[in-house]
Length: 116
Image (tube, rainbow, N blue to C red; front, side, top):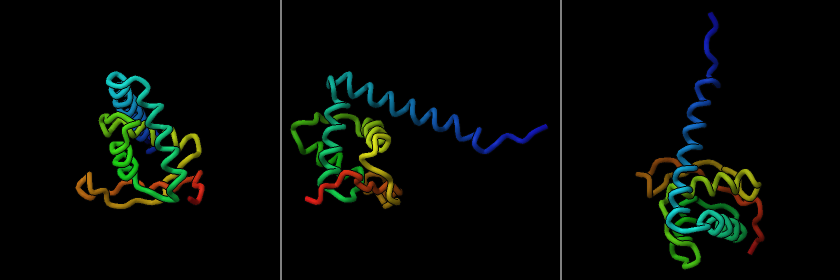
């Protein structure tokens, strides 16, 4: 009998995480057509102006901006994942998130910071 690998146990969690992000994004897109693309463009523009930032800072700035309609904050998970995959941002440690009862949340480092 072989013992299951720890990596095998992580696979369902990764799949569940992706499904949750996909569902949240689909819900936002049902409310506001092209929300995902608008949010992605906003995130990239935000990252060009900040060397390092917390996700909630970007979401709060987007909510204050009239160009990106307000959506379920969970929908941003897919947007941050896409920006990281495309090389615009990368995780740079963790800090307490005031919107999550001070639980740790990723600090993002911009890979496209323009130094402005």
